[in-house]
Image 1 (cartoon, one colour):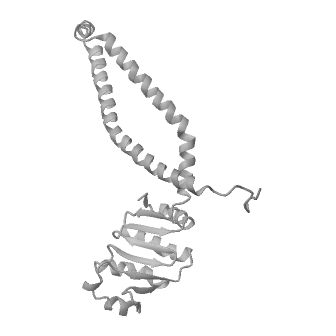
Image 2 (spheres, rainbow, N blue to C red):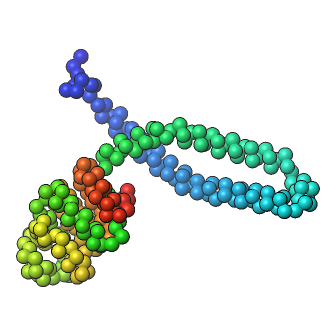
Image 3 (cartoon, rainbow, N blue to C red):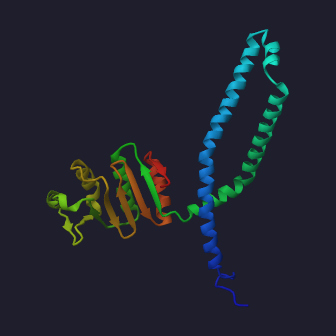
Length: 237
């Protein structure tokens, strides 16, 4: 038998492909059910609120007990509540059972993350993340490109920061100019939906506060740490 370099059987590409498709389908289905579950949450909240109201009435009114017996089918109510309690206990037990597998699945999938959206309380901190990223990863330059090229004159920025204009209408921005360049572009109203791309890091400015970044997994993990220090929220899309 011929073993691979690591002493294991080669991956079954067909099974992997089929499993990925099934996983995607199940994730869509599970998320739809959980969204629908918001109705269940509202119903459970109502059950507890209504039961709580009746309990409070019983504490305050001596006539309550007899009247409650008169207007309710106590046996049915008790049986239905016990059924609810049993179902919730079963769900709780199931969630506890799958928790270790859920954590492992999350760690597995996060190992393939090559994107992240960051939201900062202020744009200066977003710009600081960008500057720190270029320093941390020793990136010497980036290519800046705005969303609507034909309607904007970038000559002022080119002259002010001594930039080079590329054939694709982007601007070549050296690392040491980025910290001053980004606030300037923002002041001109050109930052939203612009891009700042390097060979190993791509940044889309959804706004001055919100960045969508594409990079390899190791870089994303490091950026997550820096973003946390800068009080950013990390989003998964």
